[in-house]
Image (cartoon, rainbow, N blue to C red; front, side, top):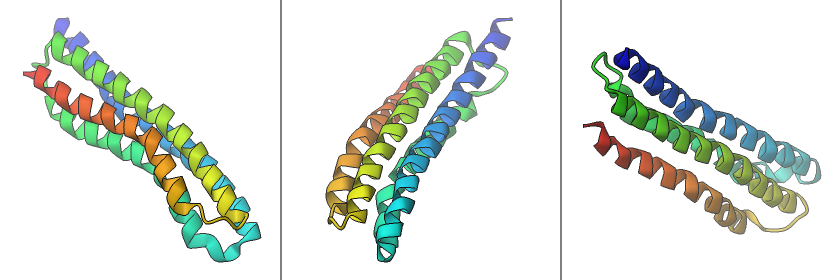
Length: 152
């Protein structure tokens, strides 16, 4: 029974670890991409710049997959309740940080894309500002990797 519960907790953790950052990345990309499309109406020549300005929210989904690859090898019949709980905690931590940071990063990227559409040269400042919410997804990824030390 304990083993079954451990596997359930670990599986939920893995699902959250990949699913939530993926959802956040999709939402962030819609936010930034929609604004970039609107800016293209004003400045069709700025496609490359707008593309760069709007793709950053995709990285949180990648971080979720990186976390998954660190933990998926532990999903074995001998998984303990402690290990399953660690996987769940890592999934919640990385999942929520990735979800929220990708959405808000999309908003920062959208503001930059809007300014670019209005003729301002805001690509570099926009990328710097967009990196700030991403930092917390990176911290969550690093913390989840460090938590593998608890897996034994």
